[in-house]
Length: 133
Image (cartoon, rainbow, N blue to C red; front, top):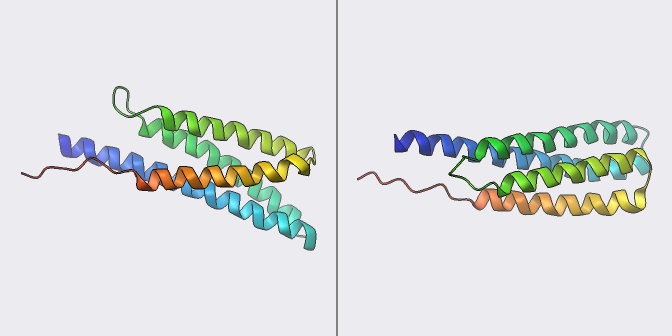
């Protein structure tokens, strides 16, 4: 029974890691397409599509954090981090639509840094060691 629980916990952790990695990549893509906005007619379309992907990735991060949490087991802190990130993503979308680059750009940099930190934390998380004996 302990092996089954460990496997389920490992799957949840892996899903969380994938969700955060996807979010981090989506934010990085947004930085690249923001540069393309200045030099290409396709930049606006790519940045708009990327915004939708980034927002979806933020929602996926919340879902993964909830699924990784175990009542009475895992800590709820990742859910708070993911929810906070979804709030930041929502603000970022509103600022982008409103064309407020003086806040939109620095918030994007902050979000990328926070996402990298969350990814590093998730990748360094260790699953409980199994005792085979």
